Length: 176
Image (cartoon, rainbow, N blue to C red; front, top):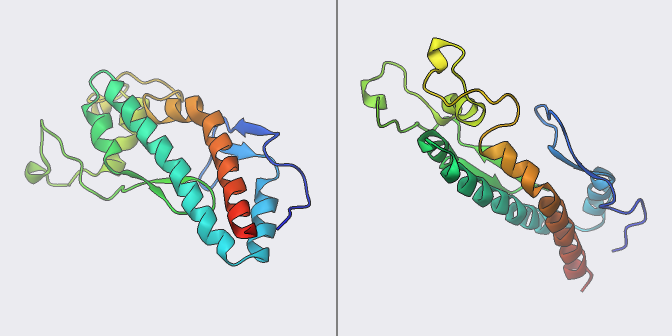
């Protein structure tokens, strides 16, 4: 299968503030390529999902290591237990936001409303302290983050490179 279009990988950039449904790492020409390639071969989507999950798993592992290095990282480590790589055409990471957050100081069994990982993620990642209800988090860091987004920014070139290598491997495998 030959792709006749713009070359992939020349324009790799990271989005400053990705919104819901928008990718944090953008590769010029990727969306068009995936759309055209998926129409040419039935196995392409299956193989690309596997390759993308492998890349996303590397990011999850990097974020877990970063969470372990954060001072007072108990919250970050507990949140990272709920983050996993999923199978999609592009590397995708999801948080099991409905699972319970395990707190050592105030367990869920004594609370009226159970605390979930989704409730704690943004405070653990970006900090708090401006309001009484966010005192339990580290100092607010704005949009820079403590463990997840610094990892994404640090690994962005590796993510794009590994993903493009994965695309090449899939194309070679399907060509044989």
